[in-house]
Amino acid sequence: MTRLSERKENFINAYRLYELACETYIEFPENEINKLAIVQAFEIVFELGWKVLKDYLKSKDIDVYTPRDVIKAAFSANILPTAQIWIDMAIDRNASSHEYNIDKVNIILKKISTSYYAEIKRFKEHIGVLND
Image (cartoon, rainbow, N blue to C red; front, side):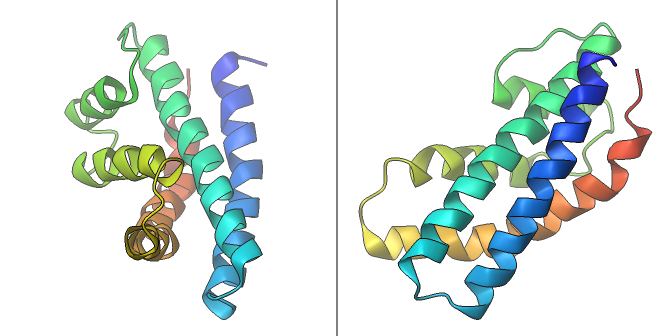
């Protein structure tokens, strides 16, 4: 199994947990455990997502290392339809671990459970075309 195949498999498994966390958070948004779960699930699935992209680009002899550079290269290679939402996800992924203002946290939670969820779902549905 190649590194890319392994990462894709890990991403799919993490996506299942993220999907469950989103569904649970949407049903019970005030539950503190659900808030923690969705943030953690998002952080994991995002990390695996950009690393899938990184491994795919590497298989095409494109060497990039940081999430932002990987996202830009994937957009330039027409792998991602838009780079901005992935850049926003990277920013909010970092902020989710260090933000203590509840209003800002709630904004991030809303994006994690709506627009980011839709983008990560789209990515999961198209991950099969990323072959070494």
